Length: 159
Image (cartoon, rainbow, N blue to C red; front, side):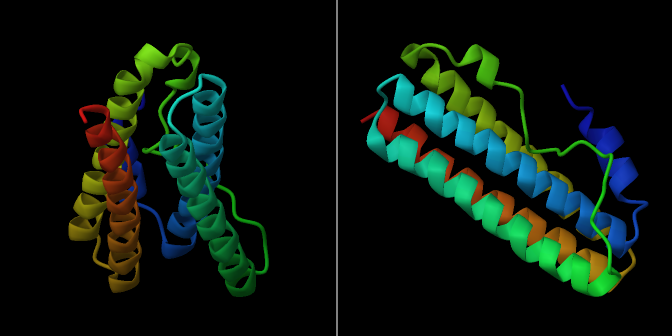
């Protein structure tokens, strides 16, 4: 499991360029995470709405990564690189082998999104650079929308 406090500490020391590179890496990994969740959910015969939610989250993250990469290349004339692990990607795929594990997987994904949202909000409060503050607030909002989408699917399980 990722040490969130350690990641927050590392992120709080980044420049805008480094934070942007981190965000791009995070979005790429999150896109892959949700793509794999969609595939696994489909293979397990889970509800189509859940498969579509995972696909949409994957596509959203992929779209963000592409847009941010374009911005990064235009601004810095190089490829983005970051060695900081993304807060929001959890290793739950290996444990998602049966349909009856769906509730546990959704809870873990929701928790991950909440942790990321709160971590980015904390970073926005800590950093002095207004540009960085805005970046972290945007990240927090992206994670909030992901959490809400997952929460809607989780609530459908109870129906």
